[in-house]
Length: 361
Ligand SMILES: [Ca+2]
Ligand SMILES: [Ca+2]
Image 1: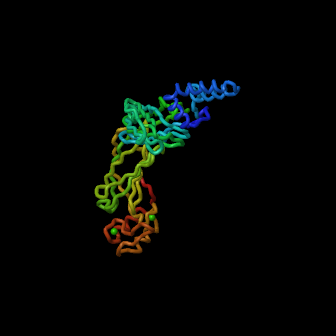
Image 2: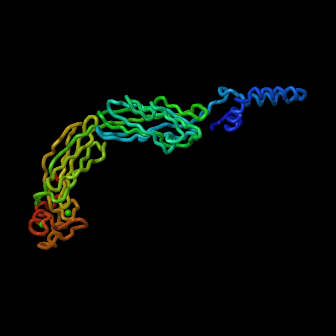
C-alpha cells in the first residue's frame, strides 16, 4: 500500500467497508441514537461526524498513490541482430513500489524484424494469483507487443526492480528499428496510477554475407589438421568471425555481418607450424557470396611464434632424421606431419627464413 491519506490501515478500511454494506442503515440508526443521547455533551456530535466521514470518505477525495522514480527500460538499450538470427531484449521495471498491475506496449518495425514476446516471472509472477487479458498476453503482432497483468486476491503487490518481459527479435530486413513504449500504465492495488518514466531503444538489423575460399599448406597434400580463418571488419563494428578450414579439403565458408552500407573485411588464415596469410580489403554487401580463392601457407614456424628464424632451424636440426621433437611450447620439428624430421621439413624453414606472419594471401 502506498501513502494513504487516511490513517486507517487497508485491512481496517476493507473490513469496515464490508461491514458498512450490510449495516449502513443500522449504523446510521445507532449513530443517530448516540447523537440524541449525547446531545447534551458538546463534543459528541463532532466525534460522530468525524467517524462517519472517515468510514464513508469517497475514493476520489483521497490523494492518488503517486510515486516518482519507477522506470520502464530496455536491456540492452541498443542491440544488433543479423538477418535470419535472433536477439533478446528485456523489459525491466526499476524502483517501483506496490505494483499490483501493469500494462505496456512495445512498438517495432515489423517489416524489419519479427518479434515474439514472453512474460518474465521472477519479479512479477504472472503464473499465480494473476490475470492476464488474452489480447495482451505477451502478444506481438503488426509491430506491437502487448503486455498486461494484474494480481488477483490473495496475490500481493510487488516492490523493487526486476524484469517484466522479454521480446525475441529476429532480423528480416537490414535497417534501424526504433523500439518504443506506448500505453504504459502501472497501478497499485487501489487502482491508482504509479508514475513511471519510459525509455525505449534501438535495434539495428544487419545483413550478412558469405566469404569462401581454400587454404593449402606447403609440404602437405592436405592440411591434415584444421586451421582457422579469422574475418575482421575494417570498421571494428562487429566481433571477428572465426571459422575453420577443413582438414581434408582446406575449404572454408564463413558468414559475416554486414553494415547497412556494406562492410570491408580482412581475412586471415592460420595453421600450426605455418605462417598465416592475410587478405585485406574484401568488400561485401548484404546477401552476397564472395570467393577469395586459394591461398597457400608458408611452413617452417616450428615453434609457432609467428616468425621463421634460427630458433626454428635449430629445433628442426636438433631432431634431424629422428622422431619429431617439441619446439617451443606447442610446436614440432615435423613441419609436414609425416612422422619423420628430415630435409622436407628443413627446406620449408630454410625457404621461409626471416619471414613473419602475416604473409600476403
Ligand atoms: Ca618461429
Ligand atoms: Ca616431416
